[in-house]
Length: 111
Length: 114
Image (cartoon, rainbow over all chains, first blue to last red):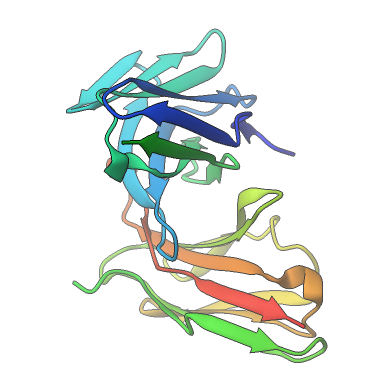
């Protein structure tokens, strides 16, 4: 049962442009959402998070948007840089601290 | 702090053999998680512990999988007997309480069962 879905397995953008990664969830009990970035041969690293009481959280080039009614969140990277090329995982958690991950989206930023 | 430490980094074993993956969480963290990453299913939660006690093992695929946390600084994930479909990258992660900064993951163990 995939409670967190990332329907785009890959995304390719040009350097300097915006990258938009999408994520959908089905469990209405989720109240905390995170994005992780993963480079090859490394573990995922935390990138940015958002609580369900907010609809936007910004950290430098990274912004996460949350649409609770649509059960949808997105990660915007502006401007995209070649070093952003990685697999991005969306994750969601309910208060019991049990985090569920999406399948990931591979982002390629071309110079 | 050296972060979450997993060993071995790579493991190749023959079908039917026992495999033990190890994890040392960050000191002071009270939650420990075992995840499995595959191409088809992405990151799947297998089991997690709170203060060394297993809380939810519903993600463990079958009885061949078992996990223990004998103390706050060590956990193992054991597969016995191993099968080719167990081939994946297994991640351990730890956290402390509220998820303000998410989990800290180890570098993973790449398991290949031939």
